[in-house]
Length: 81
Image 1 (cartoon, one colour):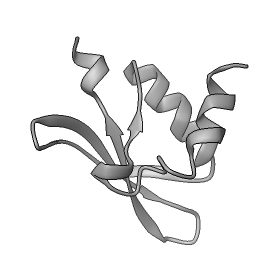
Image 2 (tube, helix red, strand yellow; image 1 turned 90 degrees about the vertical axis):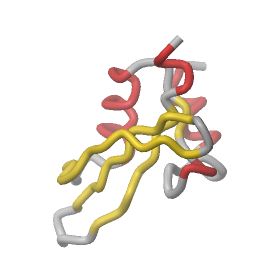
Image 3 (tube, one colour; image 1 turned 60 degrees about the horizontal axis):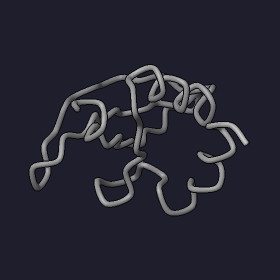
């Protein structure tokens, strides 16, 4: 089982749609891989670091080919250790 299997299994409860459902990543490269895997036809049109309850998150606004946008939250807790 590789990291993509783990992501697929956990995507139902950690879909990145909010801080509470953030995708936990160990590195920024892992974050980029996740985006490439699950949002291949989208691009990040905004990126910011947001702290919620002392937890740092990377927040991306993704835009798909139809122009629809969705926020993605990545938990950076383990990236900063």
